[in-house]
Structure formats: structure tokens, C-alpha cells
Length: 286
Image (cartoon, rainbow, N blue to C red):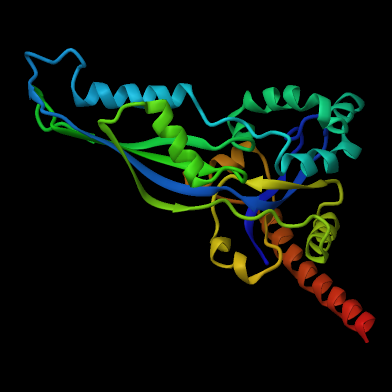
């Protein structure tokens, strides 16, 4: 199965690769909505308690989680085949790093942690998205809550996340509730016929692109179909740069006419290639 995912990214995206990179995502991160809340006596704002009240107490928890993220799992996930596939197209220095992850993993992990887009590839992320509390300027609130959106890296489970939150917050007065969750996907094969056909098709439409496996940090509908398929891949056959990606779900969301043509052309070739692949496999069985 193939659904939406990462595009063909313009030059300079991947370290040591000068040309465009096509990322066929072989897994996607999990998703959880978690609510942190606290009930407190409240009172008049003219006489705040020593702990500052509910807002201050919950704010301390937010800061603690921000300063103590989930551990990186570099070297145990999708980044291993990603760097191994990219190595043949990298400059000599980066090729040396990618081909020897057993020793250079800490260095590459540090480099990836410096950018938002790449840091999300190697760890479970926390993002506070909504906060509620307080009804009047001069009244300490009785209850405050904050919504935490977390994206689970393959290798981290929801139980791991909850244990981490409770350990870092370390405040029995703060309640932790899971509103919605789904675990990270399984990792699909980079050796399957499906992956090879998609890889071949990307090269037909974008011959200059280096095609490698990757991890989708967002979410797709593939979570409903994972148990029905041996392998699930996520890819968008569009040629995009950093500025294009910023338009996703935002202002001036667009692609060029040429890009639209390439996208249609990709799916035409993909169906044709899968048809040919099936014919070969069928005749081999006969």
C-alpha cells in the first residue's frame, strides 16, 4: 500500500548529498493527545500561596517536560537504512560517517538534534497546543489544564511516554489523562517488491534524485490499513523545497503546473510498473 508522505526534496536537504532527495517513508510516528490538569483551592489573587497556585504549578510541569525530552533512539531505527542508502551518493566525509554508524552515531545524532525537522526523526516529540484556566483577573483558578500533543517514535510506546511524563513532572497533584492515542507504525521492508517498484518509478520521473527510506513525522490514514498489508509506504511524488513545505495547510498552498504534471506522470508510471511486476511474478510462479 502507498499513501501520502514525504516528497522529493530539493537540493541541500540531506547532509552530504548535493542533489534532490526522494524519501519513501517506511514508517510513521504514532500520535497521542494527553491532558495534564490540576485542581487547586484557588482564592483571591491578592494573597497567592507560596507555590503560586494552579497555573504556576502546571507551568512548572510544562517547563520540566520541555527541558527533559524523551531520549534519542538514533542507531536503532529507520535512520540506519536511511543513512546506509544515502551513503553511496554522499560526499566522501559524510559517506565515511554514514557507512560507520557503529562509531559515528553520537555525532550524527547531535547534528540531527540541531534542526527541528531532523530532531523529530530521532525522538518522540512533545508540543503543548492548548491551555485552559482562569475566569477573572483577580481570582486564582480552581482548575487548569494543558493539552500535550506527542508524536511517538517507532521504538517508543505510549506506556514509555506516560512513564516519562510522570517521572519528569513528579507531582502527584497533576493528573495525566490520555484523550486519544495510536502507537507508531511497524517499519516496512526496503527489500520488498513494492519498495523496489516505487523506488524505480521515482527515478523515472526524477532521475537526478537520490531515493532513500525515511520516517514520516506526521500521520496518515495508513493506520487503518497496516494490518491488511505486508508493507505500507508513504510518498508524495512532488518536487518541493523548504518554502513549499511551509505552505502545507497554510497560506498560498500550491504546486507549480510542472509539478502537477510530474505527479500525474508518476502515478501513471507507478501503475504501469506494478502491472509489469505482477506479470513477471505471475509467470515465474507458473
